[in-house]
Length: 252
Image (cartoon, rainbow, N blue to C red):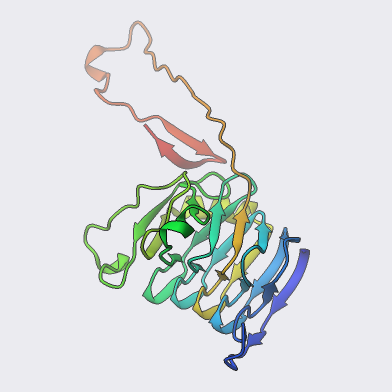
């Protein structure tokens, strides 16, 4: 899929197989790639309001995608079952923000996996979004909702394959500038979909968003003053900002 719109569809739950899953798109293949278009205003009475991946070994690939303003009881943006694998990378990747969950996991929920499942299925969540802006993942569980906690718990296991030993519920926090960068780069949008689990995306299989790039770039920055610059005007601390298209995305 490179364009077009899939909207205002519903998957009803008749308690048969995967009835009620995949309001807009249902994936039962390893050959589905979504590169562009709009998937919005769809509903699944069970899982995956916008998109659902049926089972192992099915794999869905998405590029340049923004997942936002979706709603669910669990995992407003994305939800993954014990056999689900997810990778959200930066290069041609994705941004997940401003989704809502009634019970837990505004932007992401991953269900706990057995020791055997942890060897095969995992979550990889980048600390940067499509466009290069920074995102921070915080706990958003039933007993510690992000919006109600004075000192939210930041998740440390980003940028690596994370075994899901117990249910994880997360809220993604990013600056408006980072969101603007993602929206500028997006070609595919998954928006305003609804489900019980996984308002935007739900999966019992694997989803890969973008491509992981393990190359690291180091920059050496040197600040110097003119010889005649007064010592009393030299600050003790100087902040150096990394900017993309004029948006401050990080600093040291």
